Every structure is written in structure tokens, then in C-alpha cells.
Amino acid sequence: MSEPTLFGANRQVLTLSLARAADAVGNSFLIVVLPLYVASGVVSGATYGLSEALLTGLILSAFGLFNSALQPFAGRITDAVGRRKPFVLFGLGVLAVANFAYSFGSSYWALLAIRATQGIGVAFTITASIALVNELATDTTRGGSMGTYNTFRLLGFGIGPIAAGTVVNGGPYTIGGVGMSGFEASFYIAAVSAVISFLLVTLLVNDPDIERTGGSENTSIAILDHESEGLLDPVFTLGIASLFMAIGIALLSAIEPSVNARLGQDATLFGIEFAAFVLVQVLVQAPIGSASDRYGRRPFILLGLAVLAPVTVVEGFVVAPWQMIAARAIQGLAAAMVFAPALALAGDLASEGASGTQLSVLTMAFGLGTAIGPLASGFLIQYGYPTPFVFGGVLACLGIVLVYTQVHETIEGGGIEFLLEDLRGTLARD
Image (cartoon, rainbow, N blue to C red; front, side, top):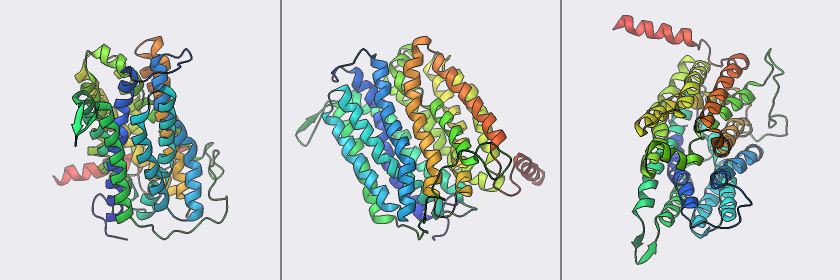
């Protein structure tokens, strides 16, 4: 294994992180582009009495639904085979084809099918790549490695929305004598980003030597905790907390037209608001993950949920773009405190050779949350603009209760007391 190079992440993790950043650029393009594409009048077909907002929510949610449903299956396959890289490449190949196929989609149901295909491909990419990161890290670098991986992925995810609004509004284009609309250009960029990611993984990432799981004992997902005094399995509990977090952060995308109308803004400002959440995570995810290697995972998870709850509610009451940007930035800080430490904690608890299955609980939950979020906001917006955001805040509060009562610390000596003691020592030396 290579020596650690950044927040405990070795060169293999950094390469895999760069690859995920490339395809994340394309994926995040579509978060902003698809609602505008549906609302542009280009898309037609039977609606079966569904509103445009709900149809948009269904299209966006299809990715997360299929992605989440297949992740335990994908994780279990990679554990049984004992290989990760081929499944990462398979998922990226499917993603590249699906991104390109959007340029031919002209009906609601075609977009729904393409979005579902995307979800199938990414299910394999996410589970295999997260398992790779877990196995390339050590017990003392897992938080930093998870944070670094997620930082690069989110860097791509943050750049995409800012560029997407500009690309759409700047069309049509003529490149090499070929004309294309702003929407088509966005779909092509998304496809090319997946191809770049495919090439990076092919050339620069190798599978570590892992033990193949011999049966179903280590590849099952536990719901109840049979080993301690808790009611729920701690990994399953972390999955529920990740689900609630993801729902809260994904509420915005399906109601983009309503947000733009309320705040008096265009697609570019919405892209900046969406990206503010991600870009803050880029800055703090790796340091927080690395800090969780020293101070423990649980304090960061609890604090993140405690911040997430009120700031999600506040998003439903802001009246200016700068206020939404600020709220999304704080929401990004809160999510960073939950995501990397939670993945690291689950990795600490994962059985040998079964990290694909165990970590898929969290990645599945996050994907399911990104599916439920747009669907929930598309439905709840009819009961008043703040309603979806209040719903997200309540879920975050439930997450605090679950983590506090059902999840134990895995870092010896970790905890808020250790962190405060260290801070006092630092101040005393200064």
C-alpha cells in the first residue's frame, strides 16, 4: 500500500477520487438541466394527470430509487467475487451511454427510463468504489480517506451545477460544423465526463488482495442489534440517519421553478445555491474525516444532524438568493460532519471481506434519500412553500435521537471530551 499523501489517503484513493470527480461533474449537470429540459416544452407525451412538478420529481427520483434498490445486490456480488475494479468500470460504462441517450429523449417516460438506467450503472460504481476506499485505508486513516474521496466527488458535483446553467443559457452551439442546443451540449458533457472517469480507473486503479466471502453470513444486512444492548444494528441505524440527511439536502432540486419564482432569480443563481452546499463540503469533508480518526466518529455525526435540522427549515423561509446561498452553505457543513464519519464508522464495523455489502447500507440509504427528497418536495409543495423544508428538519431531529441511542463509538478514547481536552491543551501552549 502506498504511503498516505493527503489527510491519510494514499495514492490509490486519490486516483479513484479523481475518477469519481470526473463523472460527478456530468451527474450534477443533470440535476439542474433536467428540470429545465422538462419545463422547456421539448418534452411531451402522456402525463396521466400528473403535474409537471411531480413528473420532474419522478424523473429525478428514478435514479435514486434504482440506484438504492440495487446497491445491496451489487455490494454482495463484489464481495462474493472478491473484485471491485471491474464493477466500477461496468457502472461507468452504463453511465456514459445513459448520459448520451438523453440527447434523444423527447418524452417524459423516455427520460424516466434513461434516468433509471443511470441508477443501475451508478449502483455498481458506488458500492465497488466505496469498498475499494475502505480496503485501501487503515483503521487510523479510514476517516480521512473517506473524506478525501467524498471531497473530490463533491468537487465535481459542485462544479457541475454552476456550469450547467451557463451551458444551457449559452446555447445553441456549433462545434466542428455540428449544431446543438444548450441541453444537448449538457448531455454530451455528462457523457464525456463518464468516459474520462472510465479511463482513469482503467489505467491507474488496481484491485487490492481481499478475501472472498464464502457464504451469506457476512453478506447479510442486519436490522436488529444482537451483540449489545441497543435495539437496532449500528450500521443500519447509520443508514437511517444518512437517509434522513439525504432527503433534507435533496428537497431543492424538484421545485427549482418555485424556488426561482420566490427568490426572483434565474437558473444560474439556482445552480450557485445548489453548488454552495457541495463546495462547502469540498472544503471541510476531508479535514472532518481526518479529525474523526482522532476524536471519534459519533460526535461529528450528532453535531452535523443538530445543525442540519434548523438550517433545513430556514431554507423554507428565506426571501433572497444570498440567504439561500448562506443556508445551503451551512447545510453543506452539517452534511459533511455526518457523511464521512458515518462511512468510516461503518467501515470500522464491517466484517472482513464484506465491506461491499456493509457499506452499501449507507450508500443505498443516501441514494434512496436523494430519490425520496425530490419526490417529497414535488408533492409537499402544494401545501405551502415551507412545508417540504419543515419535513426535512423533522427527519434530521429523528436522526439525532437514533444515532444518540443506537450507535456506539469505535475509536478508543474518542469523544467530545477528548476533543475539548485537546483544544484546551493547544490553547494553553499558545
